[in-house]
Image (cartoon, rainbow, N blue to C red; front, side, top):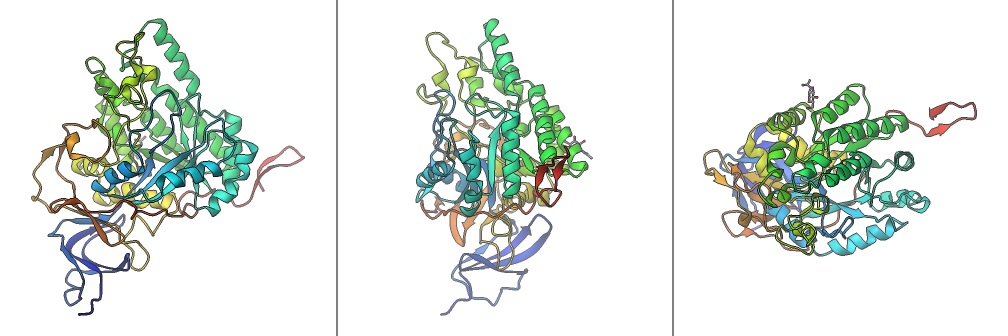
Length: 500
Ligand SMILES: *[C@@H]1O[C@H](CO)[C@@H](O)[C@H](O)[C@H]1NC(C)=O
């Protein structure tokens, strides 16, 4: 019997960034073929049918901030997940596309070698589709001259750091990057913390012999983030070169971002579940436990801070919600959190604790279960906007007939899933803990579909996807982040400067 479609999904409540409605979806040749009113596919023949039973049907998650299999860039820590385990964890939590980092070290002067080496790590190892941001540690003349080739290679974004001695760029180097990025229509992601303030605070704490994990928070004061965020905004505005501030954690930084956006400056911002769900109290645990929540920026003062970040997510200040998945094993004294413990520091020293936490699998379920965002906004910040911002839309992050890949999440219908406590043993990463252990969840993806294949079926086999099915996606220029003015930034002999 001839079939019209490979898969149809009926009885779903389809949610996009702009609309919620009762639609049925047909998939053919890895693409969304039809989205029609409920019942409209009743006569269609399909190889497979899924009854969503009234559950939400959303585009597959796009996680645009993921660290996997990175070489140790600072200290002994080395990321726990490789491309295989990280992408496996992603798909089991409903994320079908990830953008990971290709990290250039300060000692290297080329970016292309970094890109090709990262391709080798990912190739044939991924469960989900993937793409790369170049992490620029050394904006040498050679590296800057390669931006053009990066675009040809499908890389339209890069990341720079205003902190960490191993990666920190000074303001002149940031201007070099922003100028060339503007020319090549590349979006620059900025880790905005003032590295010198952090170093100064660290020295003050050491003088006082304060080494416990909670002092990681003290050593990264909010002011360091607020100042660097505002500085990044000024540098970006000066160059008319769009930026995205990654992992924003403080209300004051968010307010600077909002005010720049209100003035029409192309400033975009990201936050992460750790700034919605964790606070300073999570760092201040007995013994070394607090190390489980050491990430940068650190979880902030109080739930009132988290509330402001939630507000910013709801009101559009934050463009995207990413995981910043950067996992280190806890009980590992070679490359994990406990590598910071030694004879000199038997309870560890905060400055040597590898910075980062796991979250690629829990990002969607944690946030949806909290029930604090409008559903369309949830899809916007977790799927559509990351795709738009990084030049993947509407291939990813959408359910557009004939254009989008058939990447779909089907959630449990109302009342079908009992509230449960998150436990690390439920997760599929290669990490021995989750910082969100014990959180109460009400939702989890029931089915996840990647280019028409059911890759996760929670009730029937769990992970069904295959390593190597995920493929590299070349990205276009951002459809969201654009300079305000057409032309080139330059300085004229009369002393004036700007866009000409
Ligand atoms: C939106 O959220 C931001 C960041 O949390 C906040 O600074 C701003 O006041 C909010 N704006 C409105 C109009 O609510």
